[in-house]
Length: 156
Length: 79
Image (cartoon, rainbow over all chains, first blue to last red; front, side):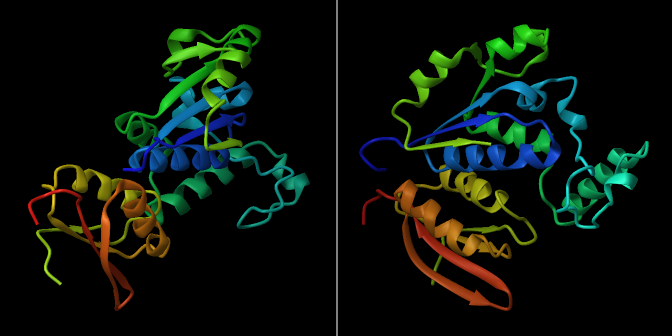
């Protein structure tokens, strides 16, 4: 082990299926390397740790030119297209044996990644704290206190 | 190269090979050698990086038939 334990802090601001992967993968890997890992979920990012939503995160086919099968926006706006794009993405990930979001969350908890909810978002959006899988709900100063001496900080 | 324990992560992709390695390494006795087999191409850099960060010694890396094989030794032990 090195002298000082390294520390990773990530602000997670988006709640789409594709945006949920990088923070969860980085944090679980960091913790498995003996680092401290902290995830601060804010705005739509809170969906990732919302018990009622984390199993049904979606991929947006609209304004997303990077889809494996590009969908014209006028088609992407049709009813059912988001569900279709999401199902395709989930199948692609499962075929390649990429862990699902619920599996990654479980792994994160197992290796000691800390989850925080943004208090302001929770209040503004009227989210119930009991629906969130977080260690604490904190504000900007609380996050900065944790991130102040971090070795890696990211905004996703 | 001789190994005391073997972990096969064939078919798994990032971040699972590293997470499984950590789990296997945890229960390994100090000084013992763990052999990790992986097919994930990211593992080529990930397992050595994990070892370096976790104080494990990377004894060797082999590539055979699309598989990567790593030998890592847990710090401590008598020798």
